[in-house]
Image (cartoon, rainbow over the protein chains, first blue to last red):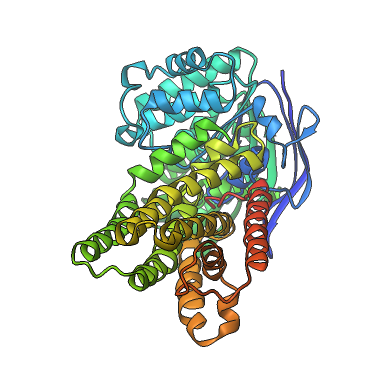
Length: 303
Length: 238
């Protein structure tokens, strides 16, 4: 059982702050690092993987610092986001080389186990350069698993995978977590994280925006004021009806239509068509105006 | 030395298209030497000029540049270095292995061809061929250390290395004698000069100084590469 601890970690590049005062503890099981692109997820994973020095704060694995400490890799496996492995090697040669670099007592057996684990035996004698994206991801996974580390870091492991490959990898990650490993993966897709991670850490604009299990995060993301833009046959009358009902926090009458901020998302979406029908108003357009993940995230940050 | 890293590096070096340069340049030297030999034009002066101009001043820096930057630069650029760095291997072992591979390549593709070309043209006369080979060998070691360090420090290692070898050593060296003394080429030539009786080879730097500078550059380059690799920051995707 291993624990990764981040204490008040910041990282800046010149004047740009990429990660800002993040503290978290990552224990056994699957933890999802969720955030929009450019939020600082990769920077965080690079610091956890020892490829980037924290500008401030500390990143430790079971109490030992990770930066400039190659010994930490005995207990840590890292699957980088970049696709390129050694394309001129076959999958088997690559994994065997990784096993030897770890100085494992029986590199051949370890390599076989790791290749089996990711179900790549059938393609192990082909050159990595000829692998599909999903196969590359799996062989990279095997390279990180070959020394059977208690901690595994995966940077955007599902990027570019087709749905079947995605399910396979999710299965594999679940199995490894069930064995008591500490697994962290990053993603910008809520559904991926939700399906796989017991614990979710949300990063937005370099800050630790939220933390919890998927129910909590889901609630945070839906129980918030939703904005809609509504165009109708009679905006004024519709505005009056909505205000009378009380399910909206505010209603703005603008030349483009009504800007409505709903407090109760479910009730509002159920109510709006009925209100319009009862008042005899024709709805032309109902569009959520801030449904992008980024706006969900920025709400979490502002909270 | 780590045999696994050495194996991967050799395969990467010899499998890449750049490897054609490794084979091509020494072939040109050997072809030239063979042509001179069979037309009986190869006197001691010509041999010395060719080995100096083409061997030490062209083949050596170019091959050392290809080998020295090639053993580690592309791996850092493409990110595969992550697979080596995420292993419990001391960083100096990685750098030393890369350096040894570069030196082996320079020896195979610059030192040996220089020796063979020299023997073809002048045999063992005045020890000219082995003297040049020795010069290329020590120069190759220093250059390799220099270029390995450059490849760890900068993404533009090849450009900087070319500028150094061509502009500083070749061009500037012709005009400013001071610049000429501060060049790996000249130090390598000092070693050659000391080993041959031929009067045509003349270097501007004394042997003890040249030897000390060669050792210094090799040690400093290696140390710099180790230090920088220890805190190598992998370019983030963001």
